[in-house]
Image 1 (spheres, rainbow, N blue to C red):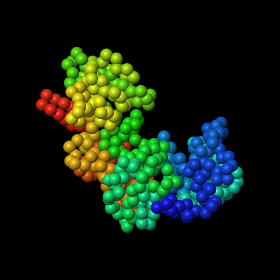
Image 2: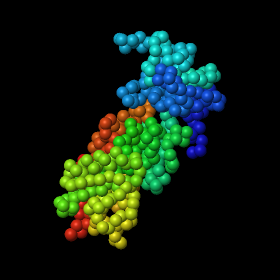
Image 3: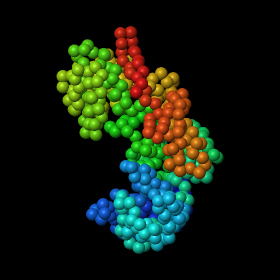
Image 4: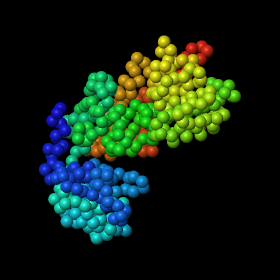
Length: 412
């Protein structure tokens, strides 16, 4: 296993490997300075701030962002004449490619888009970069080998996933522990390991960060903390008499501010007389927590299950009388397996399905597109699209009623 990360690097010569470091990370393998000039020459920053791969993608095929779609820069594309009816671009030579990178002038002597940085670097560094660009497009993505697809997973998922035997197009799917996303570790995709800045495909059970939106490479199987909090706000007002329907939405991390304000607006439209946000609960009769904290007993407590501590439960493991919990719908009544076990297994099945749909000539982009094409998948009926990266949005509320534990399923 230790040798696997070396397989990709072994296909590159020394100059190509140094060029890869420039392309992906904006760093010279020779220790020289590389900078990027932007905003029509008014700003110069280290190339590590905006390396080529951040816009053009690991395979050079570009990824749309902010309404801009970078050109494909794999060598197969660059060495062809192109003509879209409005503009003719002659094929690139190595010399013309060096000019485009450093001066922002394409092979037809026309200026490139202003969003394209002009890079300043030594001649030997640019030669290394051009050598790598000529290789780009023929290199396998990280984690893909003739007989293996390597998937990095959170350590807590390993007991479930290491039992699985999955094979797609004669490749075994191998699950190995990963602490963080790092292409140098040679993983194609990840389960329950997140980095919004990475274009590596990432599948998580639920989204627990303050930002409810997922990046273009991230997928959640089930409703996260923000969606659970929304269901609580929409449905829990009826647990109080009309005159007591006052809500405090509490958080400490400022990153929750925008989500808290959206929840406050939602509360006022769903039966709450008043709603406040911030660190203090004040004298509100109900408290919604967005981060872990001690559970008060003197008011109605609304809790997304992911942040519910032991103080929210009694000695029998049931919610205390003043607590309403919100779970991803699939976490309730799921049989003998825990929610973590079921979600890890489901993520593995989703990966196998997406690999099958992607075909043997696999890229991360085709894999992400394959997940976006999946609908009504598995017992949990997960559905994805390009605009919707959360498989199932339903939430189940759980509380202690007069006749014992009661539940209510809430659709988005």
